[in-house]
Length: 332
Image 1 (tube, rainbow, N blue to C red):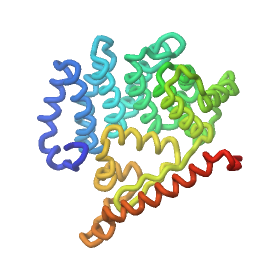
Image 2: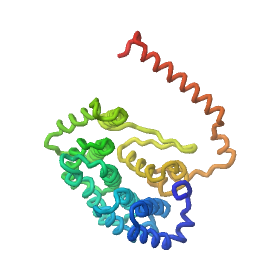
Image 3: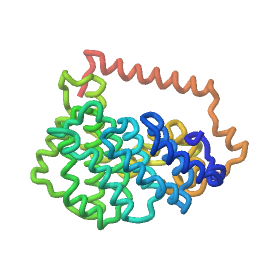
Image 4: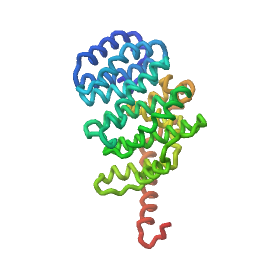
């Protein structure tokens, strides 16, 4: 319900009760209960927005999120959920630089090479946790003030290249995307990223973009090659359509932000992009569109029209692939 509906006013009246219940779940719950509490807290903060109410919810539960996240005896799923919640809630509701810096430091301690094992390879059971921590860390980078961002660019970004050799394909991909994001942020600040062997880093990225190792799963190889080709090209503009509107993801910072909210909201992302004032402000979409019934009806495509369009697209795709697959075709 929190992901698929906008319930801000309803939740504002009950935020203290909800916060108290979530605190008990995080403090006394185990495993799945803590994981669910982290998910609900993220969605609650998203509904509260960046005002004083959202800030109050975040401040009251921040220490518990950090406690569960840094507790090595806690359930991996609970720690993963708390890593996501800490990053998202800080992004939405943190008003002080101190909160932002402390969250960045906490998340960095989870995915840094010293915590992922020798050689930067994450144990299989910790892969999702390290991915969630790195996702949240990279999201918070997009709102870092220039002063703190410069210190990260000068020192801490060097922890990322070792993660490119992780045994987890998801962690390798996230590390590559985060490196691309840092290079983009450095360009915006007109800073140079100093690396003792920048050519070696580029070589690593090229290997990942063309890897054909048989011990990797075929789907993993395909996904990895596709994403690292995008990283080497540096920026790929992607269009997100929702209702009568569309949004361009023309930078790694914007893409990282969109992916973070999509992870939390799932299929509800389109509804929130249309109606949630917080998301519309974050993505500079302006106030929600007010459409009358006639406009809404005109915007909807009938099932028959969709079927015709999909059939035509399928036929065109089949023809194009057949030409390429034909051994007599000249493939450049």
